[in-house]
Image (cartoon, rainbow, N blue to C red; front, side, top):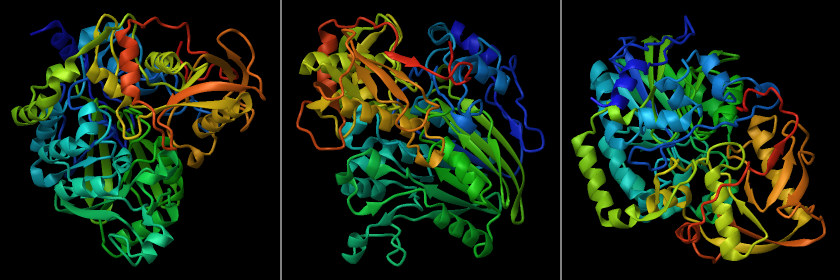
Length: 580
């Protein structure tokens, strides 16, 4: 038994919530980390935002996740010690490592990687076996097919095979749409579960031209909900796809479809399921993002639990939200395969009597890989294994992406763009997917692809005025920090290279960004033009894919860290969404 395994067995625990007693129960000295007490008569398992990471990974949780206005000081906008205090998690424990950024490098060496589909398969089978197959349901919240070199090459087909073996019975989507309609439908034809999305409709033109739809009368493109018999009760699962697909991604991928939150349509659907189909529970499988789900829960009644995703927030306890019909519990289950949500329901006729929820970290060294899943993964990876294993560089500092502002990985990408494309300034999208690399570890081609693999990776160089650059930063900042969650799209701030600025998140739109300066200390001039390099534009580009640009930069030994992230924050002193 390794040191890591001993440490995990001594310190890992499961977060438990009962609607009658909302508190965390710790099991710090319990060697049976994944033995859960029996409760209720229906178990729903939830995973989300795995981003095609079939293998165990390191992933550092954010040190900056600022909540503004009414969201300040409330989950999911808590990091570091504030997070531990709120959820009563012991410092330096395995759970502290899984859920926060604190002592990440030290804890990573102690507790190892998390996730991995072979390990997830073992854990899921155990959770289902405890209650019986007919008393459980496995759901995926989307962002399943994208985020690795393999999934990008196979256009998500690898993840369909993995999902089928895992036993996913229903899913919704986000990045899945960026493969385009044909690939999406081809993959769904092979998927053994159901794809649910109540909020995706045909455009007027597509409807006029009789474009394919689940329900031509309403214009709904996909099945909105399914009803499952679990534990002798009827449980409705509604799918809520990412509402802003044509805005956040190139419109050319989904030209015939419109998206949106559509809470009015959702309310009608919930009422129909309650009144006409006589279901005992309603679950929303959401890819809205947690802030959006919290607002939606206050506006739509009749939903018992929202199983949320998109914003990658790992929140151990559901957040209760009052509405006209009672209370809805809102969850969010992290990313990269690090966590498995276990929702146990005590169901009665027409209602949920009680709930128990655990968000289980998937410690890869505590879970024996499932042989069948591991064999499938090895088979799919085999043609590409040598290329993925290529050592591009050695990390001389921690490389990570996640956080509201520049992470060290994105700073390197910006350096690569500026160097290769001779840009004065670089802009890199605020994607939340991408794994972490520890100091002293090899940076492989697989790591490079885990940061960059998508269907619109082309790099570009554009001439932009200082005024245009400021407008871009203000626009993205408003998306991130708008006090109305319905105007947030869930990404982080655009990453910048060659530029520093001051950000005041709590200010009004158009007044958050100031004091823009180039690396040479000169102020950005509103009317002057600058050479700007970037990638992943919503407008079609012709440049080299960013993974080639990034890999070539690292091959030339350019790994030096930069002091800070180039951002000076203003007006957030004492905000518990900021650590250190």
